[in-house]
Length: 123
Image (cartoon, rainbow, N blue to C red):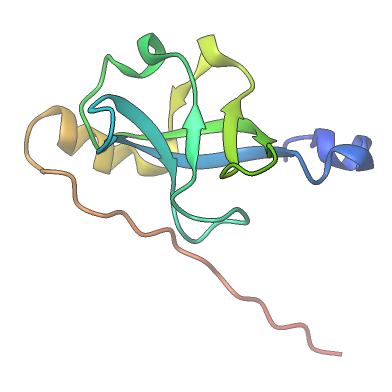
C-alpha cells in the first residue's frame, strides 16, 4: 500500500489528492487537449487538471492517466487541479485494456466506468 502524504500531514487533506484518474479530452473552448477527472472517485467529476501538454500529447484522446494533484481554488473562479509531478504523468495501469484499444484504433473514446466496491462490517 502506498504511503499517503495526506496521512502524514493532516493540513494537506483538503488540497492534495493522490492517485486520481483523469481522461484526456479536447476542451470545447480552446480546442486543446486537457485532462478531466472521472466520476466515481473521492473528487468531483469533470474538473480540469492543469498539466504540461507535452506530457500527454503522445497518446490519443480518451487515454486515462493516474496522477497526484493539488486543488487550486481561487476566489470567484471555478476550482481546478494542478498536477504535482508534471514530467512524470503516467497512463493508468488499471485501465490498460482501455488505453491499448485506443492506441490501436479499435475503440473511439468510450466512457470508462470505475468499479466501486462496498464492504459491510459485521459486529
